[in-house]
Length: 271
View (cartoon, rainbow, N blue to C red):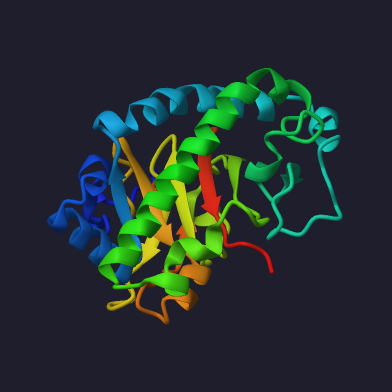
């Protein structure tokens, strides 16, 4: 018999409207703060006017992701850079154990030599626009969090992400197929390095560990929303006032098939 995890195990995540955050709606800002404090995850609602472009582009980015990973291994290996660590973006293909990724560095997208190698070059305009929109969205979240936390001057969260300095922020395309038996899916428990992570998935794939109860629940894969989580640098920068939560990629039922994710990692400036 196939194994399935009940949807009743969804983590109780807050949903916050991007349009209302841009309008500085006090109630929405409080919802943002509470989600960033516990569990450190929330859903950002992009169904208003401010999220139109990014929602339209997402479907095309998924298509680009699938087409890229469908290439022969030899073509993708040309983009493998063994000299680059995980924390450094620099446009790079990485094969893993049962998954594969390609990460595009935001600050390299303007370079025709570095931005989009191989067949990705034909989609550079789309990928650049989507990355820029993701970055702007993440910076909006930082501004609202800074304001509600009462941070100003050098303590303002934006000061660690100024465009005049180099950082490793970037867009990551991920191929993470499910396996025949869900119990055989590898343990990927971790917290994210960096500041904030924006994550889309073609289907339910992410579990979150409640920092109070220690119990695991699924992050709902809700249409028109993006899953957002606080990462380690932001937890450190706020002295623990915001929480970088343990989470993992998993699968809710048996059966092997393709599955894709698109994520944007906002990372602080390198020093």
